[in-house]
Length: 353
Ligand SMILES: Cc1cc2nc3c(=O)[nH]c(=O)nc-3n(C[C@H](O)[C@H](O)[C@H](O)COP(=O)(O)OP(=O)(O)OC[C@H]3O[C@@H](n4cnc5c(N)ncnc54)[C@H](O)[C@@H]3O)c2cc1C
Image (tube, rainbow, N blue to C red; front, top):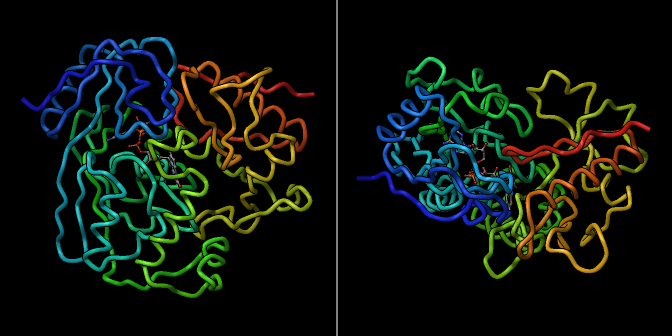
């Protein structure tokens, strides 16, 4: 029997450590059981939440009124320079094992928490690199048509921190991902901060083992790797993505970054730094609402992260995130977009002044 019933609250299965219980909480370790269970729940119209590592969700404090499935399927199959990785495999362990075999291109994506199955959902990215660059196709269970099928990158509709999986949260169960990688340990440096710590310039290449080391170190200084002794890392990573604006709308002195070349808006639009907007709207690192101390606050190490250093609740997270979004909107007229998936909760409406 590979369906394991779990006890406890979603707080214990998510990196932000908020969330109530669930009517049913299970861990599934084979694709067939995963498909059979999802199919059965869908037939009965039961609410369903699929989780990997729980590192990009904010679950409401109330009980989830259905079944939460934690996907723990395993398997990494190399076929020459392509590899099929099961949804339940840990992302960073896979990056390390690929690197050990001479496939270094994923090194800039080192240290991102969570499981393989969630990586295409928001097309994970860091230090100028996105997962979509390496995906050949994604194997899914399509809940709408009730069939198992493969999806090309075009069908996945990958964008900056977005995909068809994120846009249609109740349609697909990711079963496995096929990546195509080059056997190389020379990787391009595409991000200024990484180039600086490596004493290089953007556009040059560096050894992937060094890149992984530097990325992990950089991430640790921002509490952007999960670490049980660093409560600042009790977060969802960045809470807001960098908003996309037209060139003419870039606030003065705000850093901006080009969109990926495949984006049709690449000529007219740019991403602007959400961290800069937040800090310049008056939200400092460590900021929290109310007097005295608070378990829910802006990370002391990263102004884009909301952390839970104790027993904070989802309601407090929502209140703080709503406040930050309103402050930025009031200061710059730019609407911040939430990065994590909000489960049965939502930010307050923005108030136009
Ligand atoms: C400290 C920290 C640092 C982070 N840094 C980064 C970063 O640099 N870049 C970045 O892009 N992200 C970052 N993240 C966010 C997060 O790690 C990634 O989005 C990750 O891919 C989420 O994986 P997960 O398994 O934890 O997903 P979960 O939180 O379990 O799920 C996220 C979403 O994916 C869905 N999902 C999960 N598995 C499946 C599946 N098999 N099929 C269908 N849907 C599924 C869930 O329903 C949910 O909607 C960070 C998070 C933390 C806590």
